[in-house]
Image (cartoon, rainbow, N blue to C red; front, side, top):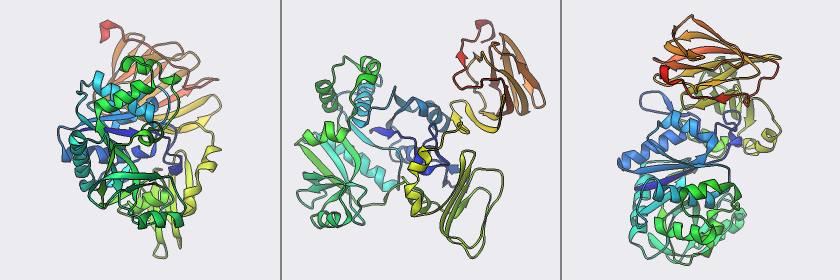
Length: 441
């Protein structure tokens, strides 16, 4: 199975756990068998491989998410990187060119495209496999998955099939309606459009070349910022007459709001939280190392992270986005390909950060022009390279880098350190990446 997972957006509806670099699909809230927690993207990735161990999985995403993907999934997963956001048609066209030109997938093979963040069970991925198999043999150019609706939702578009067979030709599409209109669609056998579809790779490449002038993957990547923003539905689906829909009647939830997210939580709290017996339908997600106490609350979500604290009625939490849009602050937590960092304190002229490096990983070799840095190793063993000189470090060691001095740190074991940045102009843009001198590689 060739599958493309669409991973985009900043997930502002799940503030304060999500931010511009940490979208909702990277938040670890789903409990695993060993008692640890996994994110939506980890859960989906694991579920796909449990259905098809040989699946070719490609994630279509923005530059800002690449580090988090590598951190959570490793480096084996394919990534089609969008240089900038241009909606779903350019993203899928780029991913198709990546599959053909980089991954060497033949044009006659089928590809399944779906969002990275649905909350589903194993039968969904078994259905995706059947969807891809159908696309490989069908005379239709597109095969969509239609979700059997459980209520007249105004959040989704609707697919109206020509009959009630498991696989049917599509009669028409309907945009997001009001609830009363949705009832009439459902009475006609309509299905939710969950943004899941399959096609033969050559079909989408042909449509991409018809709508965009490009030679190959590299050429399309280089001119990506000039492309028109347009969805796959508007660019392709609405103009295609040969379309089938395959029904799916299993569990399917869109984890787009706090209300729907808490419905998928197996316990009422994650992190340090105390709920007294007078609480009802209360969920807490606490990433801070301080306790949260809830008493006598009903239908409430509480979330605490370095980005902020949310206390909201669950229904009202769906309207969070315009308020979060007004918040402008330093990113306080981010996952990187080598580990993660969390901002502990910000003062005029200094910033203190806790850095965690995964064993075997290292930061980029880099320098800063307008700040000094001091590292205090608090756990683990590793090596620093300061201005070309390598030195072993362990817990208790303190390392100082003046502005302009190239430096990096390599984690021989899991490594934690406190980084203090000192300078009048501390900025994420004050960083110059360099090559490590060959004599110390």
